[in-house]
Image (cartoon, rainbow, N blue to C red):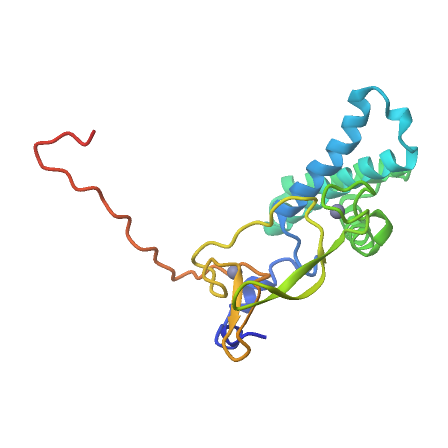
Length: 223
Ligand SMILES: [Zn+2]
Ligand SMILES: [Zn+2]
């Protein structure tokens, strides 16, 4: 733990927005996963040689895409439980996964509850995390070994399995991150080490420096 961590207080009520999912998935990351799965399934079809792929591979890609889009819809619906419209859409998206599985359709509440269990299974199932040819280099495990601690001079000190991002860059932390101040890394002064800042934690009271306004003479056009 870094020295910075010990001085941070975070509003706990904001962190437990969606108790149906623990931890709450990142919708941007879910979208990135969804686009990847859709692409792999459709690319094979569009190339016209889908038969060259193992049927289980393509079926996994299609089902995962349906699952992820339903989870996104469920998260949106959970953000406003009083909105029956979003709840119905989430349930219909969950039932689209069941239809793909050849299962009978469920009433809305049951369909969404089933969906959350399916998503948990998806997270825990190492074999179906990512395709074997994942561009992130995880070989289908959904995890890659990456440095998470660096020396002062940037030399990696320690690496661990972290979630595979399919070869994409992780989403950045802006300068209002209470933990890393936009660097993406936490400094431990006692150990003289940097570690990865995992959670972007925006400071609600952050005030950016005012933009430097160009100075023009009063009678001069600005261009
Ligand atoms: Zn991967
Ligand atoms: Zn940060």
